[in-house]
Image (cartoon, rainbow, N blue to C red; front, side, top):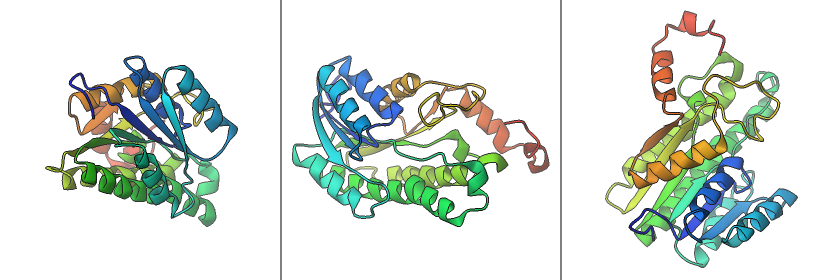
Length: 251
């Protein structure tokens, strides 16, 4: 259960090798020891994350998860919950993709849609079922400001994030009264492994800042947080920018 100070005793990281997922675990571990389930593919990075979090005081459980496998979400949630209730689940996996390839390659588009939308929707359904049975818990979904108004330069990625955002926002409404809540997180450009080698966008942020926003958002009972907060007002303006002008903006 999440205690009176807002600290969970268990944390599930779906896409547990992502920089934001790991930063979230570190942020909670700075307060107290807890059980952390790292759900990801079996890679050296997963082993390194498990070792790091164990050294930081976590009781780490490693679970296989592959976004390309339709049966993986159900197995993952069942295994993660076998050792006890899930207080907070962070859905943090996804692909950025190569924008040029995505304009012309149907196979690449299908894979991005599978990993960024289909798999998160199935994971969210499985998590909601489990947390509903528990009667408590929080699902955190990593969305993106790119989904607010997809740009021509990365419209495929943006469209998948728009779908993910809509799914988890609707899931939140469907869970009212069950003891389960959903927090949708909309970061701007995050300096991470995913964006390595790319030039910073305006209002670029860090995995640690996103983790802090997640912890604060859960404690305040928020349903949506923007990182940094100023992105909310930037995107509000861009949503209402005339289309002919929006296409010419250097963003």
